[in-house]
Length: 615
Image 1 (cartoon, rainbow, N blue to C red):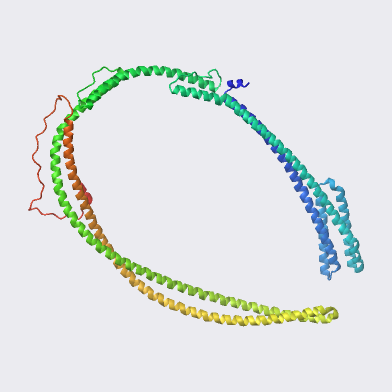
Image 2: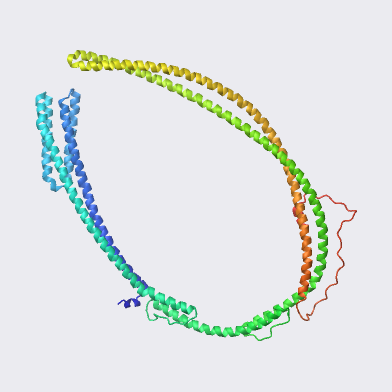
């Protein structure tokens, strides 16, 4: 059923697969977009109308209650200024109520038009009765004002609040209905999304099966055929009839198979030529292993290996000449190495004697250096102890200064407390005066002012008690200030004593510093001398070791030259023209022992280990 896909190229297959997936994703995106817009519209309508409407209705109830409070307050007004203020507050509250009503009507809730009109009529009636109450109170008709307050004023206020609460209930029911509709739409959108997801999974599985059938499995078979051909086996290449990339790969693999077979035949011919070459080389190399350097290659090589034959024969001739020259030179080197070995042994014995003397001198100076270092370290620790004592004294002085400053701050705070107590005295005095005035006014009022007279007596008693407590606080504060002054003087005396101790410790510190500096200078000088002698000792020891190594190397050289001559004699090089006879043996090695008349010369002060190495 899907055989037509074998003629489609891979880009076309991928384009078809991604187009199907893209269309599926488009449907899913459209569904999400539509659901999101619907829910956003519901939420926006709820926010702009529901929440705003509830807020305006709540403001209306608050304004109605405030109007009720204002009319009662106006009934009890006591001055013209207060009357003007209540009139202004009444107008402001009425305007706020009308403004909240206009804002609610502007929301456009057509389903509540009847209830809104009823609420508007009741608000108008409430404002009218409030104005009538204000008019009666302004004219001085107190009984009529009270009757109107408890009659129509109360009825219309309650009616307005009742109608507002009715609107709030209806808006809540409307919000619940909108929420239910939104939940239903959200459930449908979720089910539709799940269905689209299932369809998408099925489509993706189908696309995967299509790619597996037309691409993956053919590539697997071609991979198996390629592995077989790479391992040298034979296999037929499938899918050569296809028109897509799989067919092109199969065609290229078939060409590779044919080329591999042709190359195998060429390798067989080359192997036959290589057998001839390797056989000749094996025979010549076997003769070289046995020490015969006269076996050159005489077999005819193929033209491709002719240069190899020429180079091998030339290298064999050069090796014969080299072995002959080595045999001649080995005899001459043997004599010279014996002489060098004898001289090196004499020099090694003299160098070891000098190294022992320098080592003893270095050990003595090292002991002097250690004792001076110990003395300098003890002086340094003494200086550190003096530094610690000075730090402790300085810390004590700083603590004493902080204590003086803290007591000064306490003294200033006490002055501030004194001013506060003085203020309390003034307040108590004014309170007593106020109580006396209240008692006088209560006396004028007669029986109606008895309660005020009792309160005035209590306030007067409280004022007298406040004056007594303020007096006691001032006395305690004066005693505290005296104690603080005494403590400040004591701390200042302690600070003076610490200052004298600090000066004495500073002088001791100066003397100890000078002693430590002198000890350190002496230790530094001895250290430099010890380092110089140590360097000389190390250089002498190195020289002794090098002379011994040179002597050993000369002896090894002699033995190695003897072994080299023996091995060179094992090779058979035939009659080589131009060879010379071995040189005659030299005389016995000359001894390098110093004569009795010679005396050792002093070393130069600038001689270093590098000079001995050059030697």
